Image (tube, rainbow, N blue to C red; front, side, top):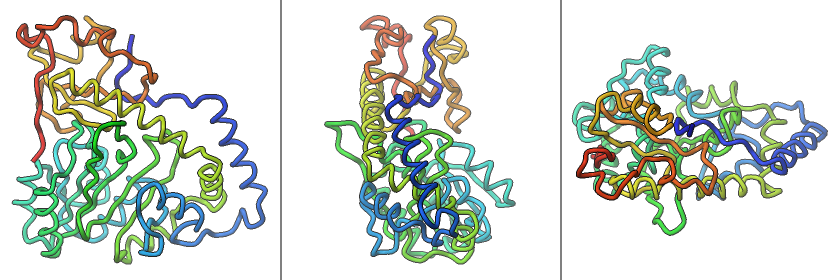
Length: 335
């Protein structure tokens, strides 16, 4: 049985011990119980800025407790929300539970319906979108920049920026004027409760959230120490290893080669999720759970060891499988 549903990979013991030492030291620091600055612990902001290429002097990154906690303050802007498709549907659910009116559409359609721009908020993920690994190109970035210039609010989720494989160019375009957000959830694990937000002007609703709901000072200091002691770089090495697996799987499956942590493929068979489990011992996600078309599956490699051989999983049983209809076919869902 091989789990390609995106289950997190267990940290090695030495990295676990490093984290525990950093947490103990942070808990013993003077001021561990203080209220953190609303922008975030200065050392942690500097560490995040270094790996993200965001200048603290220019106003970011600000520290949050993750991506989904940012949804509520953005929902308070009172705009109609358009979330790209395909995407992680948890964001859609979070906005709806906050009372926002939410539409889903591929990027071309999203830009068409998000008018007038001053009444809409558009949410995208780039680079390496979950589930299909799409990233912004210059043409799409220019169209989104026009949306922002017309008064639209754009949130660009960069959680997968770390998952760029060696030898593959990082598709790291940022839209001018967008809010750049991200989380350590995929790099570290679902317990991380650490994220960031960067924007030249922070709306009052978002600032109020960061003042009230940012991670505790001791948690932020532990992460800052962990970064200073090389722990974050160890996590980024792991991200690059996962990205290499993703790039390999995307190439051999017939999709456009990309980084990130997941590949979206279409099988020319009925009930592809059940088929892969029954015939190949692969647990995968249903593409429809991410707003993708019926008949697609998501393969996510977050839980794979670095030496995982996808051919050994039975996904590529023979060279002419494309003609036999047994292999995933190209699935192009970008704009």
